[in-house]
Length: 293
Image (cartoon, rainbow, N blue to C red; front, side):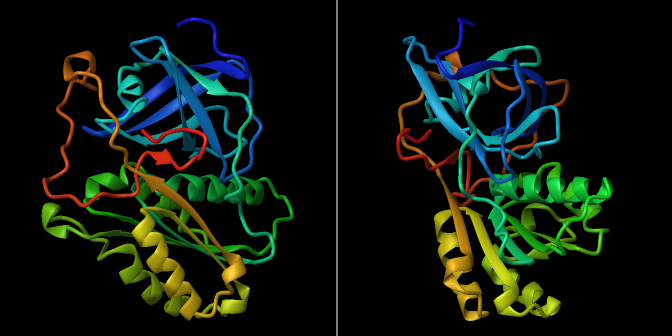
């Protein structure tokens, strides 16, 4: 790959995990450390077939203390950048912007945090929770933050490695983690919650008995889910000034020919999502100056 554009660094793919045929986790090692706050996003870039630099933004899963930048990405067949990312293998490089941005941060004025997300929308919440756990483990004086995270998906496979991670973190008294699917018949062995995020959120919030005046609400992922969750939280007494959102979108841009995309092959076939899945909160953060995809 050529030298990166001004303001960007080369970042090597240290590891890649293909969760499904169109969902993957990438761990990147930039040529220099990136400073960021939990909840922010990075901008990746790569040249397309015509040599034009394509830029897209992705929420960071990793916490600031981690050496690698972890991203969970959904492939958009008609997208401009994700087909290029899907060609990357361990050791390959992509460009990453040095300046990390975003205002979707932990609300410092509240100590009870209700977080609702779909599919890749888990990214900023895990960054916040990992950072809090690391500070507590290091013996730092941390605020008495408590978290409720509801992670929804159409199908069980869309939870990727994060269901197990959340379950392990939830052994700590300050975290309650809920995984839910809206199409449980596609995973007969599913043992988590059943229903959309907004359907199960109020049940678990009521069970905690938190007072609305102590709560900050966050919704990340599909726009319809965000609107409904905000309504649920307002009715639960959460002040609108402490409701935060991050919308993810799909795209309708033209895609490269399928022959130009290297499939994420491995020694085993990748799980495929069953047909008929509803559009979910997916790969790309809405950043006004960048087209989506």
